[in-house]
Length: 273
Image (tube, rainbow, N blue to C red; front, side, top):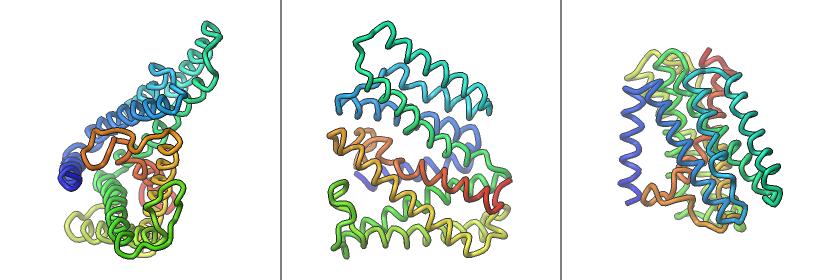
């Protein structure tokens, strides 16, 4: 079931990348934000610190304004109004535990904020570069995870973070890093050979290598952070939406961070304007 789900997800992503950039991809990102925020609310509730649900979901309209209107000012207005409404609830409900306020703000920041980084990839110009960034981020991340899983199963001996994620090993992490670099170069050669017109046409090999290392490292870190949160909340997965994978946040916990890293990296070295 895990591989069938993965195949469907890959096909869906490719379809959106080919025909749906930027607005179709932005809509998908908005759905990811909504589902992941819902799952985080449920996880925090299980931990005994339930967010104020309607306000916690305000991460969605903030991301909506940022994506579809491109207006950081109005996104700030939505955020400040939500924060004021949250504090006013404490005025009219003095017995509300203060940790509910903090857990609500936490949902705005995670997964809300890094999900926006995923949307930014779809608005890179030209179109071919946007497609390349999305495929690079998701492809290298997925390939790194897959190679890490098999590498850890075959050669894993030394635990990486046993208290957070007992199955992860140092050897698995090494394979994950190699997988990220390999995935980046697969994207590099595929786009240069069959889909010219992106930044890959003039990209230096060391930039591709660095980007692969960045994707793998940040994906691994994001996954470990999510595992730490799940352990603190007393859950195994964030949800059951994706058979064999868990919830939406289980699937994108590393990708949303690596997308931010790739976008900043691409801006820094001039791959995108």
